[in-house]
Image (cartoon, rainbow, N blue to C red; front, side, top):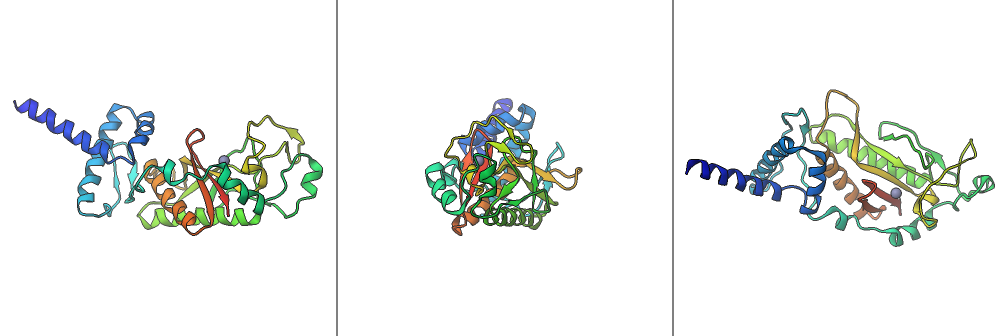
Length: 255
Ligand SMILES: [Zn+2]
């Protein structure tokens, strides 16, 4: 009887915990990332969040799980991120055309840009991933937006008790050739991709760059912080945002 009651209690806790994960549609990602023993820990995390939610509070301190990952106080945005950040290409492309360059199809195009592109590089605000199918250039307005998003993210992580962290840029401006090498690349992007206009960049929602390699923050917490930041900029009418499932990134175009 005692064993049966214990099992019932554990099952109830797991149900509560899983209900507290960001959304049922995102459970797939948790299961992709973690094995069963790790999922047990996540269940405990969910229970802790549940208790605090009862008091209408974030947990207000950082804590460390048994795998050494730091957790910071941040809520998941209510709803599915695919619904919150659902600016598909038809929404984003008018802003790309309005704010961007003419798509670069050849070297002559690169010299006849109607506005300059600025080179972006890893800095305090963001970490530039090794780009394989795009070039590290953006129109000034998009570069400024990227920097502001990166600073807001870093500030928000620190304000919640975390250490210095940066967002990771995984894609910028795409073209038929690579500047300096005239190297044609086989990219699969649509001819109508916003990435052709220098207005658009991708931020990973699975990878973040710590300054301190001895201090790692739980990735879901970091994703939630980034989601809060992006929602703020979206509500300020600064950008459009798409939560891309396949590329595991936020696809962002400056408005
Ligand atoms: Zn993209």
